[in-house]
Length: 322
Image (tube, rainbow, N blue to C red; front, side, top):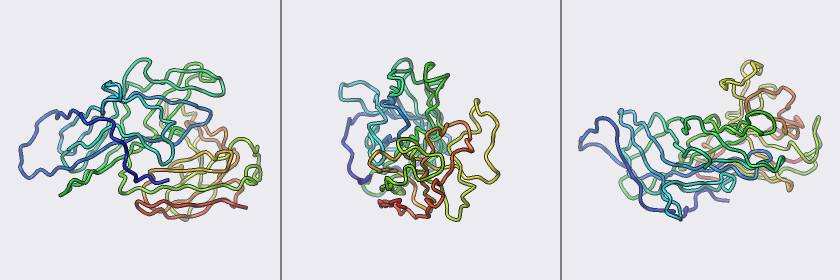
């Protein structure tokens, strides 16, 4: 399950343009970069399709660079991707080797196609619903391009944690879904690690308020030395629909969460290296991406939390057992 394998080249032609003043300073350094997308899956969905159009990159020097995504196999000038096909350590390459000025980029804006080119399929309702990306843009954080003296390609992955970023509109998905930037992160592959393992099946109903067949998830929190009561579920207090019920002061939100399948397997891909606390819970079936839910206990059983360290460009296997 390596995230450092060579990805297939989908196309070779891209377009780069700079907006505003462009310095002709001969001291400018450049690097080759690539961009991919991957995701952590979301409950009950069988498809989450997004039509990627271009990336808008804002350099700290004031310039803005627009990069068209690679053409798809049919020659379309966009990439229409089912994110659920690229879970865990899998990724879809959307921009192949592209030369950019080195340095710090303050912001990335992911542009998507408008209209009915984005949708989700919900297993629970057996329905297909429209997926709205407000203004057809996802405004993300920054990243740094390192100058290279050789032909090394610096790879970045846009990681979608759909349990945080995919939000239902209305009841039972009848009004569709929103995809928002909360939970979408830019990861430098050279600074990334992966984590996967197995949860013992007898843990599925060993905790408080648990049903064997639902609610089994692994949560990942940044740092060591965290108290159990500080570990809370996914929520977004900046969402317009947040109900004002805040978690305890100094609480720690998960960096990411991953479902445990019926065989007990879970996986995280493209996680920045560092110290983490990993916790299993068997009662997280109702983890709302917007609202804080005090009824979700993490860890559950309470002994199922551990401190781990993820090293750069390494895979770590960690199993949960009674």
